[in-house]
Length: 583
Image (cartoon, rainbow, N blue to C red; front, top):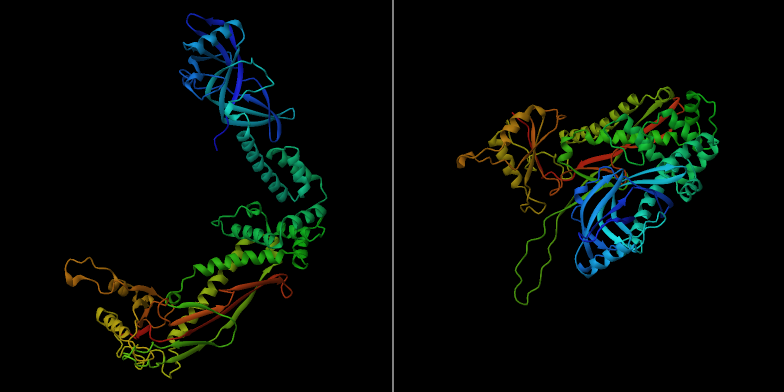
């Protein structure tokens, strides 16, 4: 937003008038205090004239009372400017013509005595003196005008385009809105109620004075009463738990970028969180030791276990998401509404179109169907965070344990998929997943090479659907154990073709290394799971990945955290998978 133009007036020194040369000197400004008023009330404006670029004033047009509508409003020019004893002195030369002659007559008669500077704030410093707001401004001078009214410390003449003061009022309103928002944030963090913030705003307090008042109020208030009222009125339980849980997570994981809402709690210890939870519940804590505070927070209706659970969940999720799983790349994720057996119906190809003779009837066709099934199971463990760890503020062990659980959950899912793949399960047609009947098993195991990989691709291209028609099964991934990683990389690497025979026929295949595969020689080729159904894994609807619950410990003196995973996997079709058992 463009800042509004502000003006100041100073008297012309009539004795400096040279009528023949049409020049005079004027004290443009001394930087003296000028009372002003904005949205927040009265204040003192003070100009800091140090460091002014006087060369910018030389050659500046002198206007008639700040008017800029036509060339007739130009009365003269500033020939030079200088500083003298802290005052800004300008030398003005009046232009020839009727308007200029009249201005010289008025100056000579003493009827025109004022020079007004128009400027915009370039830099503003705020302070308080004797209870009054003081704004010290470094001005950016943009115009010089002759005005009919002499200097007056209690008044201000503005550019006629700014007379309604709309823009400066808007600027002051926006500035005050920012300060008001900061004051409310200070009240929220300090646990002070809405009326306290309103009183500060009504008094026109600055951010610094409001912060000092908040510290004074916190020092003098009875802790339990005001603390309980402020949290329940300003912060919901969900926000309360989430912000403090995120702050705990960030303490254990310094790379995490805290949200603005959680930043005030970044350095709060476990015992301080427990104390805050007790206060929020209206329980007295004066005189309690760290051990007693931890015990009460664990064995009461406080929100302490929920905050610990939120931090555990964040750490667990981070480790769970970062744990590698090769087979998840070639499988499709889905959901299940319950724990009953999940039936995956597979439809065959649409019937072949037939010619319809003139006036002939359309014949009906049918689609073949097949069905595969699997179901979800529940897996989980309970871990404990001891009272001693809470008192010791031992976040290292706390975060390490959570991260290990997250990595273990991801590893468990990957092991389930690998076990399912290597078990070669029986499909609904009575044949094993990889079998000659399905056309997806190499007749003789062989090492990974261009020849054997070409044979695998050919077999997949020739797969037929339920109606024995060819279907589009395009090889997308080569899945190998780590023992074959180097061989596979060499085979799949793109060749810089110097001649036709150098073109790599398998450049479109992507390599997936699954370290959990037990057979060091076997390798697989699969299609893209987004285009053809094959391996599928599912979570309970609304609960993807590991879920946690917390409660005060009974078997352990601390917090118990239960990790639950509802997970299942199965093959819904054999066609997008091919196995070569290796040499």
